[in-house]
Length: 460
Image 1: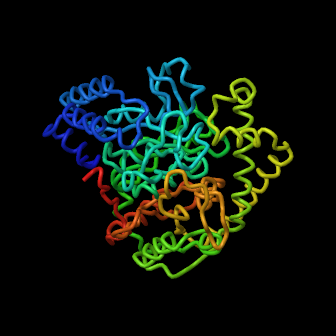
Image 2: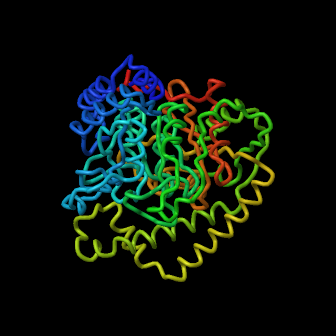
Image 3: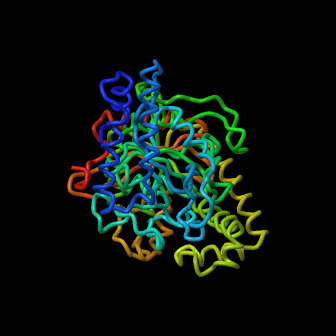
């Protein structure tokens, strides 16, 4: 699949039709996705209709930033005509959505073409997309391994080059984990930057939405198309859009960049530390900093996630417990039993950590850390060894992402591949509302040759 920016340029120049691009994408999905299980629905008729409409708009003189670019959306986004599954069997009989989610609407307005809905962990509660109802999404680099989660379908579909762009959500790491394990670029924007309207919620206090892409220019172009305030999402701040495509050309001169040490070194395997080493070498980074109370931030995220998630699904737990996926059901039960006082304390801890990080950003502009403790593990694995400890794998895949999303910071994940090894990515973290700095640093890694999205065997 050609890069999104190249597709849009060709369609806008009318040297290629959106219809032809869409037909090729649908053929690739039909041919390859049975090996991956990244899609739960393919919207073929809608895609062809949208492509024809794009060709009509372009012929009428419009220039569209994502003209004719195929994409797909995690199946927690409302897609008119489909039930919004959110990875759950209990949603399969829901009425079809009457309208598209705000981000799906913005993609269509920008000229992108929706090809389908993507697999995920049930109700976004997981990091592996080993979904008992809709199948295990497999990693295109090694189909015996996980794609990550909860936006596993979003990561696998892009990594396999079935689509150049996808939409995902990130509560505790659900964009960043699959981006790292699948070797692609992902953006978790500042909390409140992009509208969540029409995206089935998991944890209102922590939910983010954002794009995944096979190249950094594609990620920037998609993010630019998605920005804008939305009154339908109270958390979507009334801030003017901040385009980042141009920021990718600004370089990193004058930026104060540091490596996150301490907690973020302790909870990694050798391949993850090596990825950070390569990123810091490429950027000339020699400085290290520690994120204040990172372990407390993660603990607060666990309590907030469990409490809000358990409360949201209490009716399902009471009435349809046997239809819930075992991997998430017991965690929802435990969350529903969390005392209110614990939840209140967790929110206070979250605010205290956020204040400490705000002070850190007075002296540094960008922080670098591994995105996952390890590269993709085998499907069915239950445990991981970290710093001499045997830890539960599924929860531990979010060790490095949860402290960051808990306090709402923007993050770009950049893949740092090494020949002969599974891909793994780094987090590029900035202060709230400074996504542009994340993109500047990611662009420097791309320019150095250290960061790129490796082509998996399935896409070769």
